[in-house]
Amino acid sequence: MTAQHLVLPVRSTPVDGVYWSQDNNRMTYERSRAFELACVDRDDLQRIGEQVGRQYGQESVLTFEYLPTGDAEINAVAVEVPGIDRVRFHDALEADASAREALVGGSITEDGWLILIAGIKDLGTARRLVDAAGGRWQDATIQYGKREFVAAGSE
Image 1 (cartoon, rainbow, N blue to C red):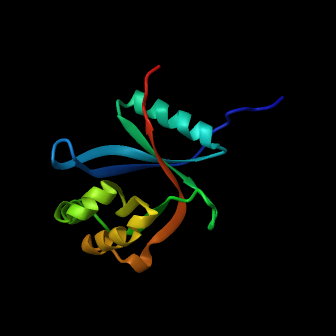
Image 2: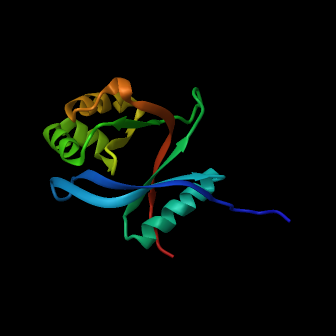
């Protein structure tokens, strides 16, 4: 017997999303969860992203696949930084037009960790934003991978 499409949840973290809405020209907040999954291939990750988007009425869902250093498909980084609260991150993002354009937003965990997914070319912008929000870049954990915005679609 073979188990197919086995997805193992590793971690589910409640977060406060802080995002710049281009359509409304203002900052928005969104309470959500960051999920970390195991035993998931790229097709499964896309399918799960589509399902989450449909279930929660989101236009798209950001997925991030961790990849080994040097992988040719790396296009982004996941940056996690302690000591940043939602208000300080909001204020720093709101004050930096180029960061709003490049990064759009990030998420803050209940215990004050910033989770930021940034394109490789935007790593300097991410660092500047972390500093402006009161974080310490030297305390950041940076992991490389592939990000994708998955459209929710319809059933």
